[in-house]
Amino acid sequence: MTMPSGDFLDLLKKHGYDFHSDPSGLEYVPKTAHLELTEGTTIVAVRYKDGVMIAGDRRATAGNTVMYDRADKVLELDEYSVIAVAGSPAIAYEIARTLEHSFQYFRRSQLQELSLEGKLRMLSRLIRENFPMAMQGAGVIPILAVYDPQSGDDGGGKIFFYDALGAQFEVSDFATSGSGSVWIKGVLFHLNRWGKIPLADMNENQAIINIMKLLETAAEYDAATGGYNSRSSIFPTIKKITSDGIADLQTEKLRQVYEKSVEVKLA
Amino acid sequence: MLDEPYRYLEAVSNRRDYVEDQLRQGSPIVSLQYDNGILLLTVGRGQRKIYEIHNHIALAAIGHTADIERLRLLATDAASVQGFQSSVDDVTLHRLTNFLLAPTVKKEFEAVFSSPIIAKMLLVELDGGQCKGQFMSLNYDGTTQVDQRIGVLAGNEEIESIMRTHLSAPSQNISLQVAFELALETWAVGRYRSLQDDDDNQHDEADIDRVAIEKQQLLEIVQEAREQGEIEVGVLDVSRRSKSKFRLLSAEETDAMVECAREKL
Image 1: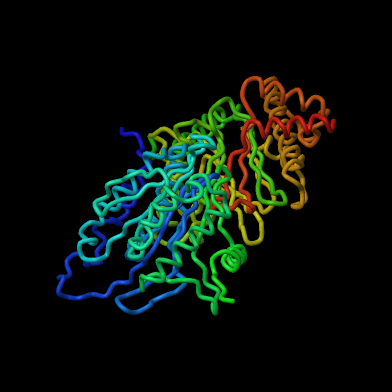
Image 2 (image 1 turned 30 degrees about the horizontal axis):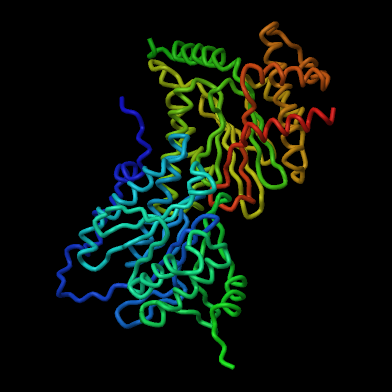
């Protein structure tokens, strides 16, 4: 008799669902087929005084076409974990959904939370299993932000990013991914090293302002990143993870910050 | 032997006696609604007895740990797969109990050549939209009982009946603290009766309806039980931000609630 592992993927396989060999057949489509897959764009996470703030723009594109301007690329996995996804939404949402259910299943079946290391490995495994799809253009490069209550107030916020093969890296202060990330990575480095205060010492308001400015910058140079849409009142999705858990930053709050500190009004 | 109907009935009857004897000393479980959801309470001896099955469904059980675990995992697996492949909305108490757990338990109970399942379960479901509950008890023989207001589980039906009478029909608009006090009091009534059963198995009908024990006596029962174990409280709470509405109250929270209850006396 074997001990139940609490592995949700194993359970799904027993019921006929296999994440990496989902018979979409995309991995067998020749590259010459020129499929225009829907893709997501710029995501960013920074550590700040109270924990981690993680954000993403709202645009999803397919080639030159804007498919959707209200995409949500920042997804909650459990009470202290959030994933932000750049790349193919179809794969990204499936990975996020699988992770969310996996964490829940482990907790419910094993009567304890999955460890942080277990969560990180689960995400690595899903990205690696998606590699054939990534080679066909349907890849996902996520950022995982967590708050580890065991680490206390000082070092509870943690940020991890991944490569296409599922290798996981922990960063100390910030991470960004997606097509617009090339335009803001240097800015993040500059802010962290030569800004008035290091990113990790920012208060909540300062973190929001910087993130909104960064995403606005990415939107300025990257056609696949959506900026603030005043007519439809579309703002980036921003979540904070602190010792109190996850909280959404509401549109009204973002509007106030944007109008006061991000938007430049010419006299 | 079982080709004779009488022998089969006798075997089932013996089985019933055996299982009931095994369950007789189980610590009662009480569940009722409060203004933000549903509360489940028991007093255990270290072994956890209240579990999360899915976002809006919880389970509490008395019986043999191995049997409880087997059924709990069966329900958890089924709910998790259904919730993933279809929708959380498709995971319902009705489907889990009537299509999965009850047939499994009944089949095992009637398979007289294998060991029976020694467990009784109480499953509760929170309808988050309306903050309403549904309570379904599953007996060791696979029979079920549905209630829209309260749920109780104890070593035998007689004790359950007494607990139901004591709990009567609490208002849905009571606070968590009031629900906790009511549940603890009902648990103590059930425990008191269960201890009485140990002393004397014979009760007349009038005796069953009359559970005249003082509050102080109830507190003593609770205190004695706490010395041997701890109060376990789970809630399905609509105000929780996360998709899962279940949480176990911490020992500090239950201690504070007990103190608050004690001060009222």
